[in-house]
Image (cartoon, rainbow, N blue to C red):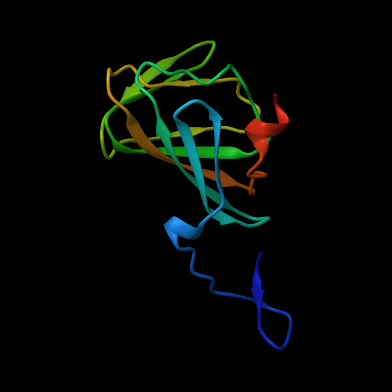
Length: 125
């Protein structure tokens, strides 16, 4: 939900992590919505050990930032393994997989422009 001022303009809105919308698309794969706007969305996620998302694409451009651990991004033509603090840009409509190659959980942020519906993974089931 967007906050608006008396003139109908969008205003700043804080999101508290422990009160944000969240779900698990698969066991222990946790996603939390930190921003869910039309022009941008940001999702915090925990990727379980050795977990890989299904190959997928979406029209939104994506920036994935690794907060903890390692994450590999795999496309038809390229694979990139990222360490803590690294980021990768994934153009819209590029099929990709995000995998945690470690034997412990990794944590990341997904930033989508324009914003992606937070229930993306629920709709894929």
